[in-house]
Image (tube, rainbow, N blue to C red):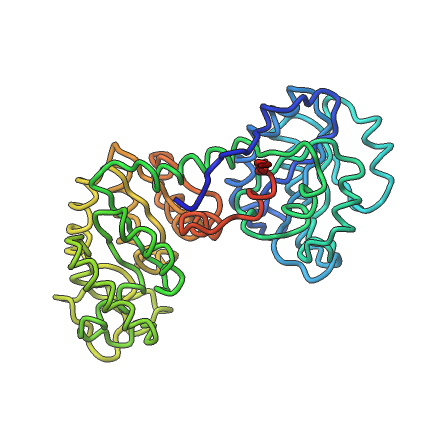
Length: 402
């Protein structure tokens, strides 16, 4: 495997933290609507590492991004609601510090009490963050003694708090969340139980090609649903009406079908659909077979497809799920996605959900608790699985000197 997993990477357990200033890069990028956090999964996922550091007596400076602010004036991207929620969950005072580049933080750190922690305001308010600016990193390094990255969802980006800062630090490692993420993803690559099934959904084949290529040799079969499926059905010469199709990927889909056949691997595609003439209407009907008539578009998998997919899921020992089966945000088009989530929940073996829309779908289905692992990093988990090196991991890996 091209990925080295956790080899040469220290965890927060490996450092003496008492009285030390710990710079903790977290992923607290939660959805906020009118000042209210609508999903606090990422906050909850960060708690074990923060609690451990507090118990060990570290002086904690937490940092995270939130959304994509253009400037520091974009106050809707303030971490204020997050600081408030962290205070409640941790039972300590979380001080939101507005100026990560000012020297005022040093006296604040000197007087920091056991029941206090600092959260820097949204690091993306600083232009140097996304530019991976060394000067910005040097300011942060000037008051930090230990660096811990626990922001898996941001580890595929070479930003200042992910890459330039740890580059300057001697004592650096990862938190419990990243450790668990990598262990779980490695399980998918290194010693999965068979039959091994990859369920791919979502809109675009192009987003998944690298992962499909990586899994082609490892899995026993693919289930393909969501808008991706219409590209495959069209590649087989079937009419798909006005369903979403990536025309420039039809050749790739044809080749993939042929390669899977040649290797004796299963490929399950929809055999019926929920279709509509207008997505916004929330209305639809079920097709009698695989064909979709002119003027209609597929928005979910149909009941026979659900039964076929459920049967395959029931037999699997390892399952990786990435991408919904339809437009699940609309109740009328959510049956397929939620049926997949339920089938996964009923399978007692390893089932790992790969971030982004599939994580949201698993949560919305009510079966999230039953999954072995739901990745907090959509893009990061896919990049890791396809064998890319993540900047946030590589920078904390101890280089073996020859």
